Length: 233
Image (cartoon, rainbow, N blue to C red; front, side):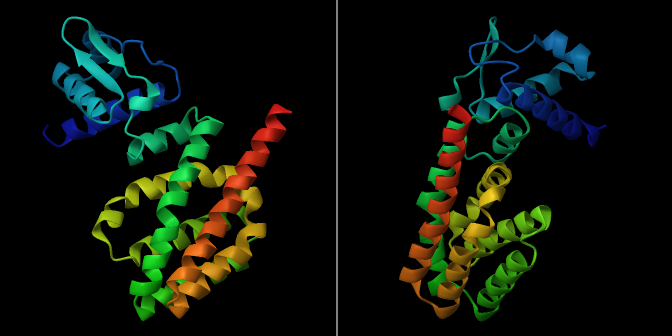
């Protein structure tokens, strides 16, 4: 019995999280009552309350005695929470939110590339080069290309050997999962910039690595901006 309880809680958190992230339960609205959730999901009141606590910790809801559990405004959500980002990817994610993720990458990843150039081991430098070659080889296979692109950026993050950046791993990985499906059209045009990042890290050139990563992310943001213009024109 103790083994199934966390699974039920996790399932309920995910189901409610997706409903909130998709806008099915919008900000300002209240979640179904504890009794309604118990009946719908076949769980105990303890599981319902545990799920509400987890959603509250992510900034998604506020639990109020007597009045119920209310969905918070989107700006109060914990946007670096990996689960939340995954739920957004499966539900409603606006162009502005995609751009916010792109901006966060522009703040974090150039610095990470610079640190990787200074701190990566020989094996890590070679791994980054090898992953880039996978990107180049698989560029006509969108699924394989995106997987290699994600591995490229995560390998750079690992090569920083910075524990604070390492703690952002789940968030960065989820951000990449959210953004990449919308930027696959920019993949081929951005290969040269990725090559420059890999080569700068391999050479231990932190300044070049930073500038090359900035070019990678500028290309991505430019593609997203162009897509928005086309959608609104």
